[in-house]
Image (cartoon, rainbow, N blue to C red; front, side, top):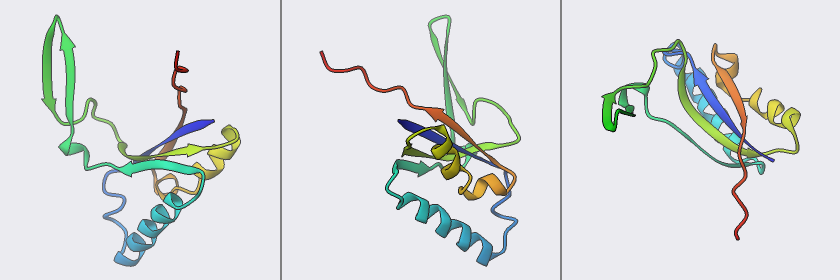
Length: 116
């Protein structure tokens, strides 16, 4: 089954690390990308670069910035193939943000509709 591991981090958490700690954390993210069960993923640009789109009363409203002001920001994601939620949880626990004040949200991916 496919799962999306949504990585939320505390703003400023990486900046508070020493250069060595930041490099070690970056290497961990890169090593996770090499695991065979990781089938995709990406880091995201900072939340300040986001654009939010809403449609209200038939009008498209475009706002600079993220949808909501939260304590954690969506920083990236991994797409993984895992036997079950336990296996996905084990991998999520290895993501550096999980131990640096952030969190990892695990979401099952809806499989595509079979071709007619």
